[in-house]
Image 1 (cartoon, helix red, strand yellow):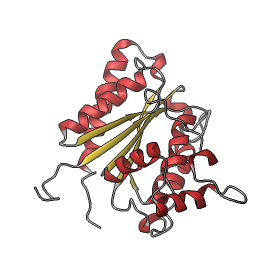
Image 2 (image 1 turned 60 degrees about the vertical axis):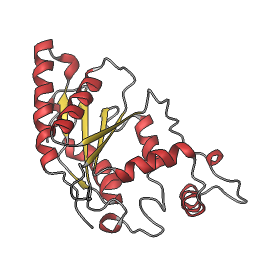
Image 3 (image 1 turned 120 degrees about the horizontal axis):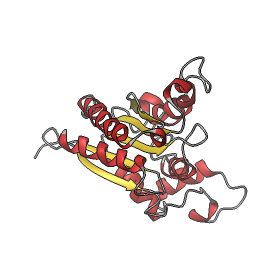
Image 4 (image 1 turned 90 degrees about the horizontal axis):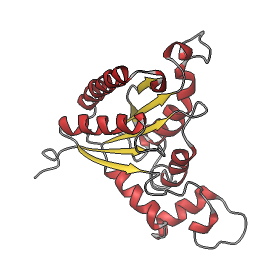
Length: 226
């Protein structure tokens, strides 16, 4: 089978500690929508894997002088000494045509376990820097990424002039500073606002909306040849 005949791959990185949460149901709905669209779906459940989020010196070879995380990442990539768990996740990241970050929005950002996944897996020398540049010259250029998340507050709170302000303001550091930085083209986020305040019927309808939104995103996520 040629590269052009192979089904595209989606990597979903999920970060919610409760397997029966709406966030987890939303992730499962998105995964099925992607499968229905012809994607091979790889799910990384960070809590079930007990992912260690802290980027520390203990995962690198001993060095003299101050610990410089990105420099050590680059050296580990060059020398083939990346931490085994990080290397396994990096390989899955690089193999995916579409990255989906699935999470509940906590403190207007990513949960710590997911931010720690980015810290450890978006390694310098592996996805940017070293043989790669930034943005359009980074390792993941030509691929797509999207956010799939829930909020505690209602949608009107995240509008310009709302109680919290524009959702775009909260997402900029993720969209630009993490995803576009390593080359991704960022798709529109799929957001369910305030599912804890919904009835069972409203949550079921929200999952159908997620299914439809992810299906549309899948149509815009076919791999691009660099």
